[in-house]
Length: 294
Image (cartoon, rainbow, N blue to C red):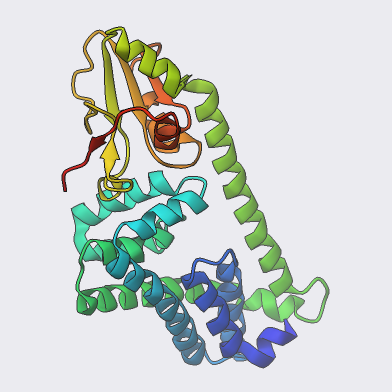
């Protein structure tokens, strides 16, 4: 904990900046520890809060301006890098359409959505003035909540600060443990989706379509991702509606067909499939595509 006592605000700023840049660093545990030290008078609460807010706020800025400059393409990059970003994009998009810029405040507290919110706001055309206002408010609420939460551990710091293990280290380990649990849940979720949702290859789907089987094709991409790439399978729709008596094949352009599997899982069992390999598999096979009209 000595490093936090000695370099308090600087350490908090750097870790909060890394958090804002979406680097895999558990800064929340350090903010809790800093709050505990501030409660004991070893750090200045106001200085630490300013450092935390500045770090998160500045870290988010590049993502917002990337979204504003290149549009939804930056969301596709996040989708490719993450296990479940595509489904997170859909959730964040739903929050954004429902609550508007205020959703930038709430998204900071939801794992996965915090990374999507700034570039989605930029890609959606939110003005810099509104974005800066609501993202700053979100950074204040998020950082302040963690620091205030850390003050509840102040008396524990006074009892254990001279005894190993260091309490800040313990909090860090707890943060890593929570992160490990979250990643394990995501992995189990993906495995469960693979086991519970049958896949259909691009070749099998093409064969069935050519022989006239009744198949409803459903594009499961989030609305902001439907032009990435700017095409869809011929005849595909974006809403299931009444699937009729035939089969339903969902598809997306995301790791492990996550969004397609999530949608297929909500449909009648035995009739719903996810396209194995998604749009990349269909394109690689050289089958016909239909342009998306913006």
